[in-house]
Amino acid sequence: MTTSTDELVTIPATSGGVDLATTATLPVLNPATGRPFALAPAVTPEQLSGVFETAQAAFEDWRKDDDRRRQVLRDLASALRENIDELAPILTAEQGHPLSDSVGELHASARWLDYYADLELPKEVIRDDAEAYEEVVRRPMGVVSAITPWNFPIALAVWKIAPALRAGNTMVIKPSQYTPMATLALGRLARGIVPDGVLNVVSGALGSAMVAHPIPRKVSFTGSTEVGKTVALNAAEDLKRLTLELGGNDPAIILPDVDVAEIAESLFWNGFNNNGQLCFAVKRVYAHRDIKDDLVEALAEIAKKVRVADGMSEGAQLGPINNSAQFDRVTELVEDAVRGGARVAAGAGRIGDEGYFYRPTILDNVDDGVRVVDEEQFGPVLPVVAFDDEADAVRRANRSEFGLTASVWSGDPERAMALAPSIDAGQVAINRHGRGVRPHLPFGGHKWSGIGVENGPWGLYGFTEIQVLAGPSRR
Image (cartoon, rainbow, N blue to C red):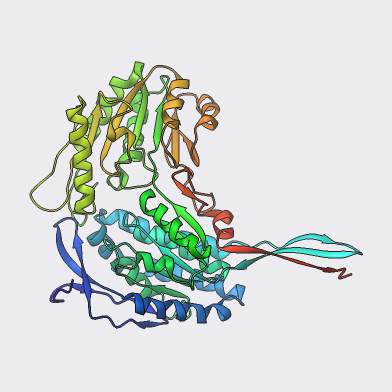
């Protein structure tokens, strides 16, 4: 689709330090209005092939200088901080975040870049004696193909960019069609900082081509489990290495010894941050029957007071859902639950006549088997399910095909910590959900929630291949 550029933001794709010339464009909607605010370049598969060739040509020089790579990441972090006032409004316009959340996302992204700039790639000498020398080294793979989602466009891009470039790879990255503009702006910002061809940003209907092209040796994908399975199948054709950070249906188990008034605010925002459009948000609450009713009412009172508005509005706490498809899914799941007997303790339904605003919703009288409990809603909806004993709560939490993150809440942290290892998830936090999402900790899921991990040294190792150097004694 091609649209007139009058009064619409346009940012070109970037490859090899220059703009890619494109004639076709794709409209990018502002979810607060449902109308286009920008045009993204529709890069063709033929152009993408040239971008991959540019990245491959840049690889041999980029991989050679470790100190240079560190400094480039530091310089990119500094440039990101210096340009937050320019980037944050673009991010809010396309994603829907309140502006303060967009600023926070950009600051966090800069922290990730600094972290990887300082991280060592270890040299592992296995044997060094009079008879032999044996060393394990980690080599970059080559060109990395990265595909990122719409919920945190810059942060989740940097989760890939920072370790991949630090390891010595080059990258071609494609953001979601719903949120390409901030990532395209990051690509332009990187010019003159990142050497030409090392970081290339494209947009358009390129998902299959990003995976199937023969040049990239690694695909790093963040998105839905359904699409992730397709990525894995296509990458298998030439045995590309994979990191898949996929969906979650993340449980919070609330034990009967909690102080409801003390935990309610934190639990609410652990579920509703970014409108629940967060892979590691709380998506289902299992509350002990003794405190369930009190917890539902406490959460509902918070939900009723939240200010939902255009992210550029002063005091907005939540913005719109990002896109119409996700808005329709959330609406459908809530309506299905209500038809099945759920009680709406707060929220439910559209706000206003334009955009994708939805009331923060707390659902009571629901149970396993209801879609809003069993499926990842990825929106501003939180179902609360009663349980009677801890073993049953764990069993029900583990019943999901997903296993990304989870949490246990208790007045006795040691009691919660003792229960945590029985939960089948990549991360289990105590008295706060997502507590372990930090640059230095591995982030990844069990079961259908992904393959491999991001962040920390483990995320860095995921962009390398092991090579053994073995020879005679060097003494």
